[in-house]
Length: 212
Image (cartoon, rainbow, N blue to C red; front, top):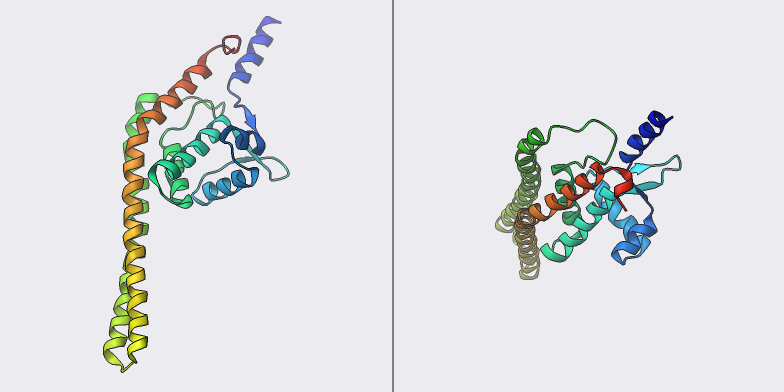
């Protein structure tokens, strides 16, 4: 009898707490529609939420931390929603929590060795994406210059084209600035994030009767 009870308790310890949209909204003082908007941005960045048979998202403690990272990234790093979602996803992938499922724990030291490489890979992916956008803008600018040189357009049209070119240049500079802010923010928040995950990890290791 006692062995059966112990087995059930052990299984329950590996099950994360389930939260709903209104729980997340209440925690961060935002509307439920904003929770859905943030969740969509996270999914767009590659984050995966659990879903029930009605395809409704089921949030967990770790998802709550990911929402916190997104909100802090927008506030502290000053980046847009999509960029903040990318930051949150990178940091979530950096260190999976042992309470997310009941699968065996990966050796912590081995996992820590892989973290810098994964971080570098994810940041490089974002950098490559921005570089591709910059190259496209520069290519468009070159086409505009070639057209201006090869044709006898009016002064008004020339000014219009130049203004468009300047606008694209500003957008390029803003994207580079956002990228720099994101990298600085990731480096700044890593320590605090690791500490929080470690606290959750230690809490999960405690017997259930010691959690209250």
